[in-house]
Length: 611
View 1 (tube, rainbow, N blue to C red):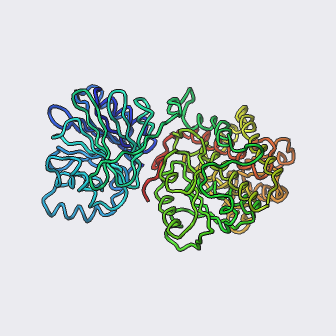
View 2: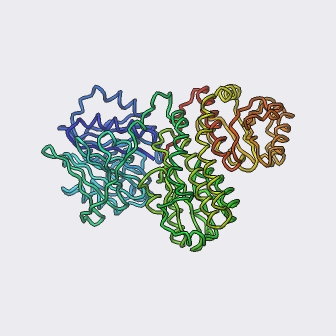
View 3: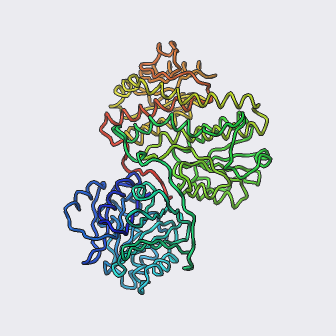
């Protein structure tokens, strides 16, 4: 989850590193640091807190050097502190390492290294890498890094510099993202493409157990790639075509609001090219339609927000194709023994395409013989590469930690998959597919209508901003929308919230209600609308403050709810797309009113690349 940057070239490394770290700060922000090769040796600077603090600290420092590495941290081993901030050095302070991932056997390695006289200065797992490289170094940094990685168990994306090899950076990866690019002024490495786009749009995504050596000498930079045995390899280059402005706020006060306003485009882009001559088009899926038609069980595996998208898809897959569908948290799926056969389809959903638990679950499923589809936002990501086919959600870069536009993109992509399975299993006719596709495409315009006037959402949020707890309830697809709404409120406002199917209220949760307790109800027009109105009445009878999301023109709900957030009328199967938007805005407005950082909520990072 941490952000890694490395640069060797003709520019001052300090400036390039800080710029890259600021671009990647959504990956971690409890501490940051840089290590620059200078005429006096490695100059390493750390700062607890966000990158801005590090930037201010080094701004007027004379750190003269054109090769270095940097890191912005999300803590796994060791609390946030200067000692635990990266880069980490070994005993002689002439080798520095930045690392994203978790070294699972670090405790054993640390004990061995201490026994051989090494002195540690941090509580992190990363520091063992620096000491292993130091121990193996004999004039060849690439070889030393290769030898060190043989000892590592777990996930790592690393970049290493050595005082004895000016202008050289060696990087390696295993189950943690590393991208390398030849820029205008030199060579760069990072854990995310966003850190490289000022210099280049052509990058190499390192595969597991491969290495890159970046060198700048005599005014020229080169990049060489190697396998684990040290043999030279020639990986393919990926061209990045999304706009650099995706990494900027574009006039919005925060990335989260900007990305919510980009949701109509996300829906349109995700659907673009999917309907050709009246038929669904999926060129990326390697399975033919006969193989897909033979699927008799579907697992959707995901984490967090992606899991909620899966819950919505379950309703649609089972309704349209009559194929049993289970949705599982990836971290649980991988540790049990699910029933998987060659006719099982596993759908892995991950915004980043690098979620550790989801990747592990994919690999387990493939070993058991399942077909695997990936749904992700990142071209060339591990989920995309390790699946039999992939549906990209076309959300462009998402910077805010809380997923908004990528969630709607996932819902749209999963809905397309549900349509395809329904068509192949004869649950949907061609005419129905065309009609459903057209109506889903219309939701982009519906979202624009919601965003045109958000005053009712803001009013409801202000009424709830001082609450300590909140309850979200709904029925059918409405209940799955509530799970995501409650998560958004928790993660960015730190207000405790829970979501329940409304029919469960009298089985326990109703005991929570008292005067002024906020209850957010998804009360859109659906087959269970009358039941939801009854649930609202039960809440009001106990003094709750009710905020309802209702279908435009519904006057009945106004008689019972304290605040109503209206959304355009859509078919119930598409209500998750439209109803999620006011819930995202509601959570953001409360967080802003409470003084919270909506882009970088505490203890969270955008991409979870460790267990």
